[in-house]
Length: 411
Image (cartoon, rainbow, N blue to C red; front, side):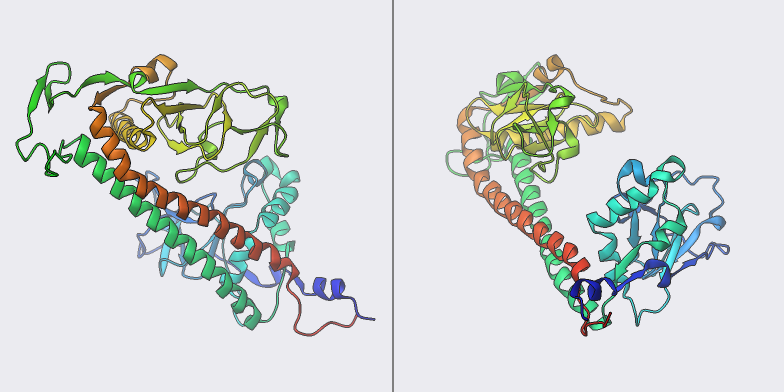
């Protein structure tokens, strides 16, 4: 008797059958590239203070080897694990287990990393970590976890399909980054350098545009521009959190953004709803984090409820594109203050209302808004495509558990 489900299940193997630990130390201090491991399953440049640290004890990790963290998996609901691709060698903390695939003729590193990237893998790891100390996953339990292992040829097919999507995602992200950098450069040219087009289309300041000394700002600004505060140019709503009992992930009530944890590039991700909305933002409103780090920005892509970690801003003259890039400039001011040692743990309603800005004339703001709209519309298109591409990526990962053998297995 042949059973398709049993044939598929028979293709699952223990991870421990395919990997082995590696413990090579930096005894000769031959490797200097220090990496950390992020919860997003990537290697990152380490910012740890290593002054006085004995780097000889650090582990060397080589290309196509993995490092992982088994600590606090239950708390984080993820197991940080990453495959080294960008360096031939690097060093990492001795706290991270380093492992490699025993035989790449049977299992490919990229395929295994794809399996680690599945949300189902993290849920299983979290389940196994319940009994561990401080919610940690035991190495022995990790080795007992299973994955489907088709032929290497089939693995390569899956990797190729996955990488096609991943590369398109990276391209879209790069395009979005370039577009936003372009828009920020135009904003700076117009409203910081005062080189907005004059009536002849030439740069205002360098073409002899009239500049007037402003005592409050202690500098020269274009004629007609003045010092103002944020509440004079934007309608501002401070968020208020509903009762915790009203939160749900089932789409009951209204879309709810609690804080910057939902923020992505330009638009927040949908994670939570509430049946008891308190404060609302409209589609297109600018969302600003009012808790550390203060000043992070997103744009509401739907009507929504906002919690106390967020404020919404709307241009009084319907120029939200201008307001968005103005707030990026304001955020840069917060970053400078942080570098100088002033930590913005939060900002109050009055503090947000009274942020000082230079108020340009409405004609210039409207002109800028018209110019930037085309850039912002392109960003929206790429972001919408990214949603689709990420859904496709997740679909490929979820289908890995349904990989079939080339030949059925007799049971």
